[in-house]
Length: 157
Image (cartoon, rainbow, N blue to C red):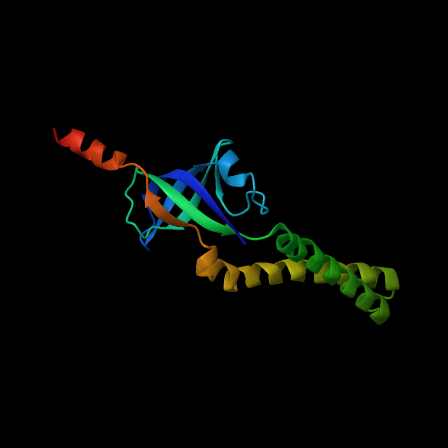
């Protein structure tokens, strides 16, 4: 898996050792195979991602964020091939069972049901495994500027 590095600004702390980071959409998405599905939108130019805050960056600081990108082939396989296979299996099963008095109606309903079930299965699997895998989670690796410290010092004077 390829390691991506982006720069952004800390917007807030989430309270669980993580921080919300504002990064440029063009820089962060140019190699991403997930097509913006992993980040919250923040206008057309920026997005927000949640990253582990190991160095203890504070709000307003510029940071370097690093994460591993999943290969495009694996993402396409999961998002396209599994639902397609589920649709075909459901249609074949429904056609052979003929539960609704019509083979075509049974095939269509079973195919649709299996397709929807595959999307729920992919979502559940993602939350259970991929989303919890630490090496795939974005993490702050370095604080680039200490703008937050300068701002707080100027307010005291």
